[in-house]
Length: 213
Image (cartoon, rainbow, N blue to C red):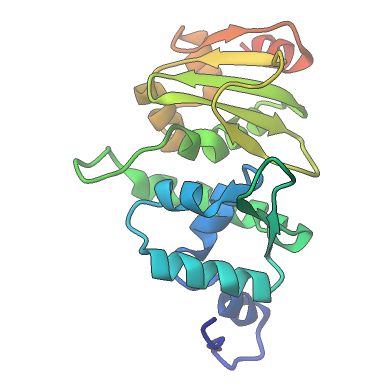
């Protein structure tokens, strides 16, 4: 475990950066917002991070009360990492950073890695912006599927892959449309209205989206 570095400034922003300002920390939080993850899964979905750096960041997050490590019950033998309540409080921080960074996203570069679930937080922002207060929403892209727990106060915020139960709404769209929404160039409402998103499901979330379009 690396010794904590500090800006030694009596400022809440500086104190926050003492804890989460290291490279990769907030991206680890992004991954753990999907719920408990194994080390190998985290490493696979954080391309570019070395094993030593990932292990160090996870230990730092345990020390700082942002994450915990536990062993899965039998027959599982693996350990998983998950966010604490304190760690989950970083969701609005990541959402604010994501909204601010929309203008920096630009077009996909040849060197850019892509994971379908990296669109989860932008889509969650878009759904909340449309007035969808809660519900299980499944999103289908050619890159892969993910699902969102809109309005969740405890537990995962999103999950990789299809929903394990019938979702309240299902959104089917292409990655180009999803990327445009993530860049702030296209609203979810306009994408549905223009036929670029197919909306399915009979739950309140689907009705809320259709009502706006």
